[in-house]
Structures are given as structure tokens and as C-alpha cells.
Length: 171
Image (cartoon, rainbow, N blue to C red):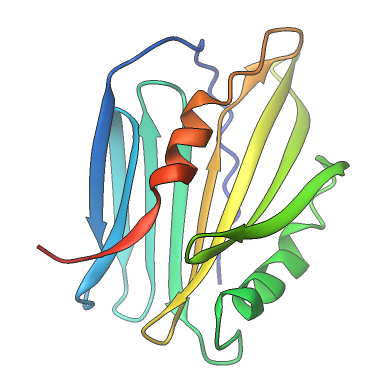
């Protein structure tokens, strides 16, 4: 049902302007609000019951949002996390020693590092999934930012995203 997307475009870390963004969930009176470096591109798709969104920022942060009916998946953020993470954790590129899980506002966060080869280059990619539940929907917000192995890993974009991610009413 869900496609796993690996965003592996490399962007150098740099100080960029910040942007507050709001993306509404089709058919709902709410959406997600967050701050990040400026949104460079976004693409969404909905079939009525499900919604997917892909976001790329000028600072190299990538985000995907999945919103699906919660039936059979969970009745709260923790149960939605358990349902989705059972599959996600099987990714062999995840460094299992880096997996951490904790509450984060209205969400349950799972953070981890992916180590991979891309076009002959080694990358280190910090990732976080924010699992939520709202209005009978399970939500999986995934963010990541790749860095070349050996380059300093800058968590500024990821920390800003986490500090500001929240549900908001449609204006």
C-alpha cells in the first residue's frame, strides 16, 4: 500500500532562510504545520481515504507524509508507530545501534541513522519518523537529510522541524 521512498540527493549544509509551512490533509479540517529551510518543491496525492506528500527544502531536508485510515493500525500515536515501525525497521541500511524512540509533542518519534552507498559515495543520513493519530487517521511523517561520510552532520534542519511540527486547523 505504501511505497518506501529513499531520498538521497546530496545538498551541502548551509545557513538558509527559514519558512513556516502548512499542508492541509484533503477532506479534513486539519493539516500539519512546521518550520524548515525554505520549501523548494512539494508534491501531494490523495485518493480520498489516503494522502501522501513529498517535500524538499533548500537546506537539503526531505520529508514524506503518509495519512491513512487507522482501521486495523491503531487507536493512538503509539499504536500507529508500532504498526508502521514493524515494517520500517527491517530496512537493512538502518544502523540499529542508533535507533531511539520517544514522545515528541502529539507524535511518537523514532530516530535513526541510515548508512548507504550512492553513486560510489558513502552517505550518512539522519532520519526521524513522527507517528501520529488524529480523526481516525494514522500519520507517518518521515524526515531525513543526507551528508557525505566524513562531512560534519548538521542537525539544525531536523531539530527545527521537530520543534515546530504540530497539527493545525485549516485556516
